[in-house]
Picture 1 (tube, helix red, strand yellow):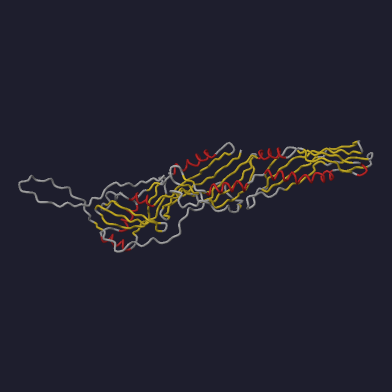
Picture 2 (picture 1 turned 90 degrees about the vertical axis):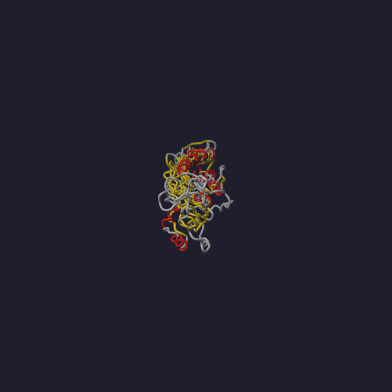
Length: 464
């Protein structure tokens, strides 16, 4: 997984051979090749370098990955069709001297829609009522009603739905004439009183068919919280921080929900030190203005030792100042910057210590160093005493190493779509939209250097 650019390109030539006198009778010897000469010798360092200052460990900035979830409303309607019997109510209601009213109420097909942040479930009710005296039924009518259930789609902080609210509205009443037409009886209120107790059963059936969002989120949270070792080396750490719900809308017969996962995703060198268990699932928050897409910052971690290898063997720019090459390099973290102690040989020889800022930008996927300075004023004086300009030498040294990140930007642009295809199945389609991706900086962190990639896009989950 780790890609190291720097290799040892040259060896140190330090021996200086002396000339010996030739005997008079001996044939003349070939002139020796002039050895490399240290013309700019850096004096010895009088004191050890100061310890790296304590600094908070730099973290990958929190990201907000927008997740779109789509569910066909017809799927939930089919669930309700299977679970709620067509006959909702039947029975008999006394109407005094006129006898009784016998009735039966059947529901029609369910229709679902979304309005004002609520899922609205409607079904027409068709009833038949007969006024009977003894064994003789002398009048009948066919009242109609509309049963409506409303479910708030903004989940509670515990990731659960509030209970649905069920109502009944008669769209066509029912009156019967009794006692030879002398008495007119409106049986609509009687039917409503008889049907109303059944509404609680309908509400319970509807609520039971709503998805158990919390159980699904908790399973996903545990999966996201678990570091994943990769087959060829490296470790993916998501570090989820929370969930945010956005609005739920209807589009072309689909319930379209929008969520955001707050996280700090990283590709680390290994899983050592990564938390085995994540934090408990935090309460759900809500944001009615949640956008369609947002930015995600992804960190890639490499050992500082790889940066030391990238230094080793590098040579000074041709034609610019005296020659030197790096024979040894030791790197440590100085807050978010790095400190590099370098052993030089050739026309410049000795050791120097610089500090610089890791940089990750452009399309190459390369970590480099910038804004270099010598570690303290004493280092500057040593460089000047050797006849060199400190600022120029520090800048040249910082430009030597080029460290490749584990995954290139072109690979990262393709990877999300490949992963989406891998995780899709017959019940779930997963698609990723990547609008943009760019290198977005780097910093030292303990014994590692982390480079960040900033992407913009969204994730679509479609339940079939």
